[in-house]
Length: 80
Image (cartoon, rainbow, N blue to C red):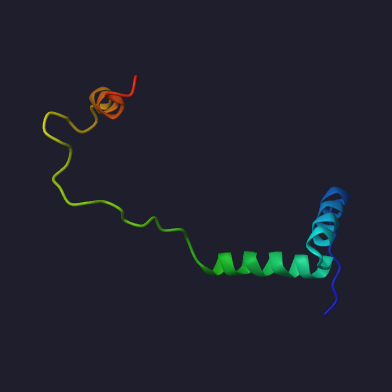
């Protein structure tokens, strides 16, 4: 199916160069990009994988939100 799309001159020039460098056509480049966008749209919202581990909070002697102590522990022995 044919359609008309208005693109900025710069974007079209860059797309043509990229297609040429990949040995493909502008049409294939546009179709690939559009397919990728449609696939991403169908994936829904990003959900961060739960990477937490067992335990009962911060280590002994560190209060939650005590960023100065936490920072000191992170940089201990690293010259920070």
